[in-house]
Length: 433
Ligand code: S3P
Image: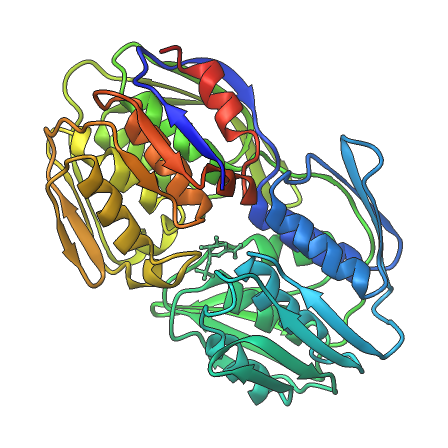
């Protein structure tokens, strides 16, 4: 375990280009591995998780070339590989495990999906149920990994997702792409739509419609994919740490180039504005359905305000909630988060770990089963932070440390590399002590 010391900072100033979005990198890696031809993926995520996906695709027979540091090339399997016994090591990555289950379930062979100590106990019934309805033979171990799949032909289903989850939606879309018939998925709360854009990018057709509150996605089966050349947009969920940090200093000025601005991911920008940040978006362009632009942020004069986060907004901010909670004590009116029970089954129980680390830094708050109430106008002090080996907890409390009194020690700081290996280097360059 490596520890990292974070000292109080005077300001946050500078400009950065960030590595590619983790969610998009996973999807491009999986679909490139399934497609015919060689996909060239520039600005692929440097995080360990999407590289777990690349290794799994390699195990299935895709050729992955990382020799050019600017580009990952994936030569796909054209949708076919020799049946065999495959062990797919998904590392720490729930996205890899859930989405790849859908991708492989119709392919002859036996697959064992394993993960690390954090991924192994995470709930997998959410993918077992729809995939079994499609005819997949999928066995969990007491509701979680290891997962065994015996590949066989799948049939289309109509499925309404009971919890908002882009990973579950994607598992069904990837299975539906290769099933017999047209699969339809309905979502009451719209989740990130990178899979929809990525599938179209690789040549698949799918349609979207709405009845009342439900969004319906329909994907005809037995479609073939063709390789693409693409640049992965910078990761807004990684940018979130520095965007929130920029709020903490009255004279901050931060410019982030080529960041993904997909509207199903960008609710954080509304939160930053609601709290008192000033955001300019420049140079917006679109690639394969994904919006990309430059974000410039600084802080409006006066105290930071507060915000209530619940319902659909909670689902849209799910990965950003730890850092939002970590800066809440420094706001003027505090932050209240509800409907966030999913946070308890992420890479760690993120509600419990946010609560533990806020306490360590001397903050008052109330913990609920599905969220936290964190009053504002609190001064935190440096402390030893327990990352719980969770990348977003390690990074969130490094941001809280910037405005604390005294130094903070992040225990298990190396977890940041799961999504953002460059995090501490960038933090040091942006925030002089
Ligand atoms: C992700 C979806 C979210 C998110 C995760 C990445 C994705 O998970 O928390 O970090 O890439 O689809 P859920 O689908 O479990 O909400």
